[in-house]
Image (cartoon, rainbow, N blue to C red; front, side, top):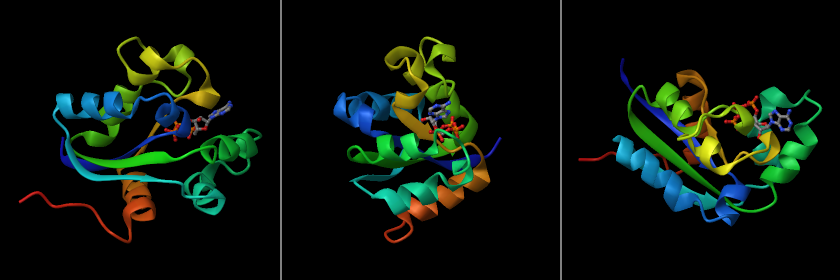
Length: 142
Ligand SMILES: Nc1ncnc2c1ncn2[C@@H]1O[C@H](COP(=O)(O)OP(=O)(O)OP(=O)(O)O)[C@@H](O)[C@H]1O
């Protein structure tokens, strides 16, 4: 088990429903360290880059439209096993299969409105952190 960084994002529905604080709080209370945080409206091209591996999926146009429907809050969390444990804090992609006690299991029902995103591998986490925080970088705690 090693210290990792993961990219977690509150999607537009999560922002609009006022879940930003709740989501931050769950990662903080679990013990993860916040090293990057920003709200932005990244636009279609950036969102298509983020989800490039899904571009052949039938739901891709709807996914981009949803992700472009309002601002998102992107975060970088650091700590032990952050990628895998981060995804377990979020819950299964389809909220109907997310366990109670996870973010999606407590706050969502539809896969197309599933409140949050989390990197799925350490390698993708680094790519996503670079995509979303590349210019300003993340913060080093002293
Ligand atoms: N069948 C579907 N219908 C509509 N939207 C979907 C469907 N499957 C996935 N999505 C959307 O696409 C996103 C990315 O799907 P992916 O299969 O990469 O799951 P994930 O890695 O758990 O999700 P995310 O990358 O958002 O954390 C999902 O979070 C969801 O918002």
